[in-house]
Length: 136
Image (cartoon, rainbow, N blue to C red; front, top):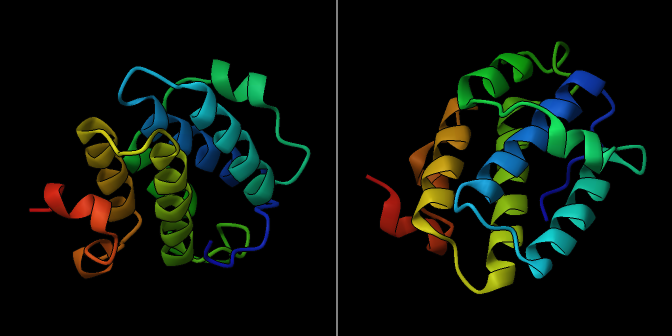
């Protein structure tokens, strides 16, 4: 898992959690294994104070909205560089999706959109074998 200290900025943490959830929900199904890994990954990234129930009830977030929260300025984004946030997002979402053994096409497209919105280059995305079939 890429090193990223827990996200302390509440607005960014909420946006990050909603983005992870958007990717995981893209295939319209969250199984038990995915659910357990989702909780574990979000606890690592957001700390113990994150509220899964509130996250599940929050409105969906778009890639553009997440990029706005990250802002391209590490000081504005609670000290988190957008590239580091993108790398963490890819790592977390792949770990959660692969709990069921594969990443669904809809999950892959959602994850790629979020990562690109945060400025992650396709060369970086190509490093993740499960995403390669959907990169154009």
